[in-house]
Length: 316
Image (cartoon, rainbow, N blue to C red; front, side):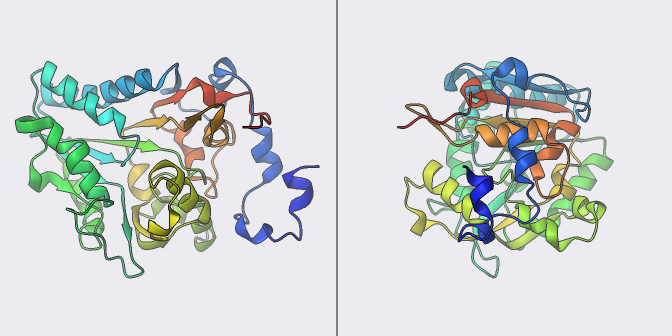
């Protein structure tokens, strides 16, 4: 007796995306970092998952990976476009640390925040307001860089006016020989940015889905609201908008490299991200599971090794 055997005809059934194959999702689950690292046929040769033993290790390694991209492009005098998330936030302190230690600056860096809370028309919070992603980035990253920071006019936030310009700006950077790197986390619904599973139903083909560049006032899945209530809002879901502006696969899967992180361990044996990690690594590409395309791209996915399980019941 379990979720799969009791879902049909239940109150919960319409809540979950119609395109999720729960038998296949559950079959993705393994146990331990060694098994998680076992290469799958659909993985890109330059994709690699990397286990971290502590949150401190995770933050340093993520920050170092991003800083290395800044360093390499700085030394080549090459423009760098970064699609960035708000979270995991601990990594940004270490990006700033390495930039200072290596005596670099970010004049060649162009940032594109991947999403932002919105109302139903795509209007966003003022960037100076706590709770906005712009506020989080200004205070949790750009200000930490001091005089070495990304120029203000090279920072792009996902407002309804600016988000539609991302594609043209990124294309211009790449046309000049620049590089595009996306930094990401993986959601409870397997989303990247706020590209939710139910969006797959709006596209006739996988190719159409892969070309979608953004959404204004995207409807978020309830699991995403609950994830953010736990991770960012101290359980208070009444503060969270149910819509957001977000980049889509037509932008982030253009990346020359992707740098990901899963740190969803809560303590006392509790966590929320183990299933998301295993499905990302094992499922294989499906528009109903955005993160399932991650292993098909060059890059690295750091994760806390506790997330690999065993994912078995444990009362807390």
